[in-house]
Length: 354
Image (cartoon, rainbow, N blue to C red; front, top):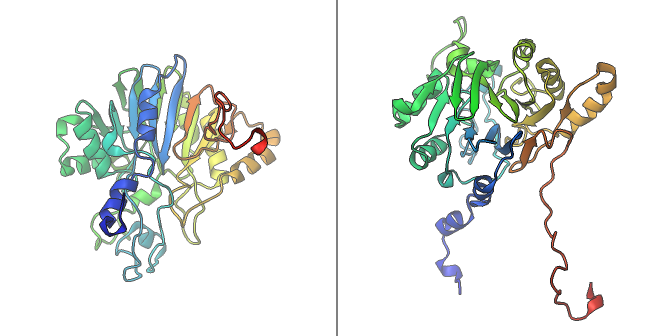
């Protein structure tokens, strides 16, 4: 029998985290993706696991870190991109609001770790370490500065692939197409806290951030990373077939523009000529949280007048989406279980107990 005197904080951490244990790892590993389809699982923030009908496994932007854990001195870290953006000094209350639904150190069969950009809630050392150790054949794919970070962490250079817009990388039966990113926040992110950016030319976006199109036999998935809205989404929509697009949605605090709004997300979907648009990132930060049902309300308000040819899909972290099977669904719900109710005799004091 357990005894309270023998329970420590380490026991609690070891026995509780990640909160889902290996449940989702096992689900993904056991899933056989049917011909003519492609499946994805949302891992939180903009992290997804993509699995093709050829059983190719692509891990994108999995972040296994956390946000603020202490009030500290109440001040924001000098040189932080949010400080540069809006001239704030007080601490940003960005607390992580989602559980860890995937155990990174139990990942198996990853063919490629793909990262959109340099921000630490997308580029994660725990994920990199786990993939490197557990999946020795996996490729590490990202823009130049993402790859430089991996190499600095000890990932062998020969495992990495630097991509720029319009590069195409074949990973088994999936073609990964790098496209331009539109992440203005990344442009004011600087590793040197004391460097002044005012009056200088910004960094080369193509070296720090890209969007991706994952071309699969079951459909093409567009991952916009942390891109803001851009008119050039329409160019991508003209040049590529996009079936599903994911965008970083959120409620921007006063004086901050860092996430796509509901209007931006619908404009992005229309510009990309997609079939399905899925908001992500709105789940993770307490100070950017947004209710994605707003997207459905706005879509219903506009769809007849603007002749929308796409539908929104409101996901939940840890949930699965399969295209085209789930194309007409609009809201994800987890399996409620109990499908075998009364398949064996129930055990109650008398039949009418329930």
